[in-house]
Image (cartoon, rainbow, N blue to C red):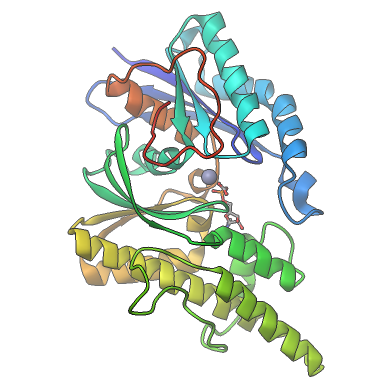
Length: 348
Ligand code: KG4
Ligand code: ZN
């Protein structure tokens, strides 16, 4: 018997609704993925404004549900279960999705799962590259998170091996973009500018790579400060800032550390599949260097296509399908959003 799962994502500034179908013995298959973003409303503030994001979710959610159902060729009556991001994320934004999901589930009299956004970023890869090997490693790199995870079962068992002690990788991109006068979010314009620059032009620091540092933790705030100091010094000397070289050198420092630590984790845990996801996984240089280093280390690399790397509803639908398929009990009707939901709590 095939089952249709709808996923609702509202943890930050994307309102995402995805629809997948789960057939016995197969990984979930994507039927539709509708995403509305309020990023342009936040751009002039240089970061997401929570109140603005919440209001945008209220406006966009129902249209995205309709668009996803139309795209999947289903009606609401065909949906067998709903999954919604319960955390982590912005409290007000999460509450919009959770409240809407509860209303849909009650009206349709179907099970509802409150699920973990971070696990969703891992689960989404099964839509593109098939079932996730058990175990696999996940490098999760987004605007809010930088984590190395051991994933024994995406529906039930995820262990954090390490995470950032300060800024997330995407956050570092966004802050460096601001220093350079590039638009928000900073990842795409830095990625683009870096293509014309020399990654070895400036030797920026590689955070947390000393012998005494935790092997699988990350730090990007020192790098961000080093870039800001370098730019200030050049400005003081009256020099024109070589934007492309600064971007390429900064980016190289980020992706060098990310890929080195991920490959070291694969070696140390003897896990031979690495999944990289989250918004920063859309970065061209990250995927190129990861591919090169994984190949040299005999590690199979999986990166979902860029549209599935940034926040979306398909990732929550995919995780919902895994959870449903694993026979997990639906969430209690009174569950709430948890802005600080830990990564090992896959369902609430
Ligand atoms: O996963 P995501 O869409 O949202 C969060 O959960 O945070 O990630 C957004 C982050 C932003 O910081 C953005 O600058 C970064 O992903 N990003 C990129 C690229 N595209 C988006 N970073 C580097 N290179 C890119 N091409
Ligand atoms: Zn995310």
